[in-house]
Image (cartoon, rainbow over all chains, first blue to last red):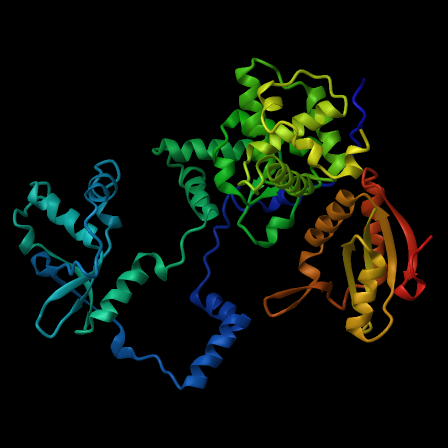
Length: 375
Length: 116
């Protein structure tokens, strides 16, 4: 029995991302705040907000802007009903870590100043504690008493503890916009590429991974950005980062050779991470023939990996219901196992890792009949 | 068999979609729009290929989707012409012959019942 499906080449077109790729060299563009104001004024969400302000008659109360000043650290009070418990390891390993500590990165202590003259911290207790601890340990030149050390405070005069409680929630995640995985990646890449700073091995390793993907015209981009519709782009950064350079090389080369006209579907990384690892332990080579036949299978039966993902998830749902009587949680290993098992069903003869055939026994019988009938 | 269709609304807007039962789907459109609406082009083939084509179209035409504030409808902006959109679909099917979808009807609506 020979493999029944043939890969059909799709005409290659120049990929605009090769020129656009924002990680290539940065934009070096600095815009003024007017640019951002214009963007807000053009946003329907912002227009609705302005309308809501006007409808309620609310105005920006300038007296509520916190004040700024230097105060002695000894004045800092920590209301334990508002703040969380001190995380000593966070002070020791993150803020105070000698390899990471840089006073230039310290932030002011945020607090409320009550009518009794108490300064109650609503944020930065870990910063304040670390600074005090460093002085206490004799590590700050010219200062021996941390209580007398003057430090910048950002404070609001109020006795309203409800405000302090809400402020703590907002400053510690509830109201802040977290950095996306792409923004974190971009920072690391730019430190290496633009700033030529290679002092952090993690950033250097990440840059190498991205460079490997780019070599095969695969590009990480921000989720939901306009770029995410271009061929070769991907948004699932956290999964990408779990692959080593060799696995990225195999995945992206395969995508660029056979599916250069598609965006990179995240299942690509799950599939080849698992295939690379299982084949490596079984000491089996991933041959060009196998790569092409897997591409032929995806193309002929599903059209693309996005549809493969939808089909395999549906088959997995049916399979778990039949086997266990309930819908079990999805398992990412099912991608590679289903692909390799379908490969054999359609007459594939290249050697594959047996571990991929053992798992999810019978899963492929739960794919749609119209594709199984093609075997 | 699964279907991919191109529809033109009563107001002349282009839309597209996939379905398992073209009669029922067209019947639903007629019911909601209060008028006969045609599936100007109706393609048939295996389910995965219809779905795969729909995913590709959604991606390629993302910047031409008709939006009402943040709501992404399943219709295209009025600037998109039927000819332009059909040409795009034809080109995709020509460049990707592995998508086994055949044009099975033109100007279909539910008054025609099931096709032979």
